[in-house]
Length: 435
Image (cartoon, rainbow, N blue to C red; front, top):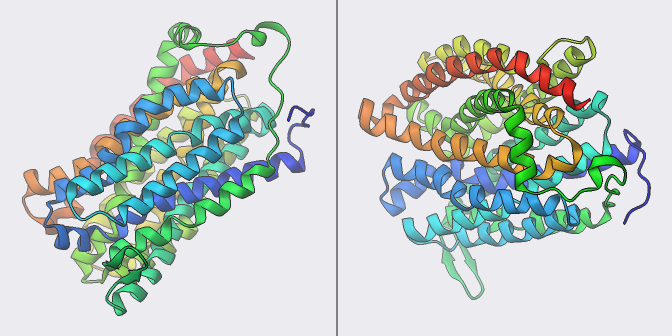
């Protein structure tokens, strides 16, 4: 549909919220695994390194390969339909995780989940940028990214309740599939909501493409790389800063339930519920804070506002991580974990909105895909796996999981803050060039 769409309208916010729900479902299917790392390790006899590979590296293999061609499609084809197709693929792949009986079969299913989810962000970012003006873009993006934190919460809270129910019954019997372990049944349940969201997304209208000036040309990778090359300092530094922040978000999301299981003697269901409740409040607060601060600083004419927000939040995260990773007081641990979630998730909206501000509309699909491919490969592919490697190889003690998380926070928090600070000047110059 190509009706004229009024930007910043009530309908535009409806689209942003619905895309946020799709983002939520994608993160449920992505992060439900963090709830069952311990039972998977026990049943399949895996190491922490293999768990990290399942959670992160398996997911990113096809995600990073498919993201760029799907971004190319988002600049040409119906973006809503691309998202709907992606949801169907990743939902079926999540169900396939529930049928896995070995590391190899589970790894392949995770690869397929990543392939389906690669369709979401490039098309969604292009849609949001088409529905909103620059003045409200960061808040719209923060609405979308808020779905990520809510998805983690739903995966942990609702997933924890379902896991406890399945565990009490010794698993599940499904017609034609036979008996499934509780963790396998959980994956099957997680696959169902995506089908409902795919139907709801059929109500979204495809906005018209720009029809005047340079934006009439059909963009390609050469156009994208030419544009990025002109502003390479801005893009490279901003991407490195955003990747550092998201790496910490993904690492803590992947391993926090296991941290509470090992350090405080909780069951997987108890740890999932507790961590999920914290993320339910702190995650959206962080996303909204990051989007609001970025828009406010932009409105005040602060140069490189996204980089300033990312860097500030990473610096604030370090002392909070020290408390979380070292205290043996559960109440203090939860309080510091909540504040840590606020600071690291607040870095997500300026990461995505910063790329939109640097990029002309006709190139946003492919550019967002390139950005997300780099972020996903670094943050998801390396983050959770690096924690497992630190635990197995550096500290050689599964009880040292907190030390592994803290080591990653020092490394990537400091590097990310430096990248963010130095990105400000070139980002401001590039943004002014595109306005």
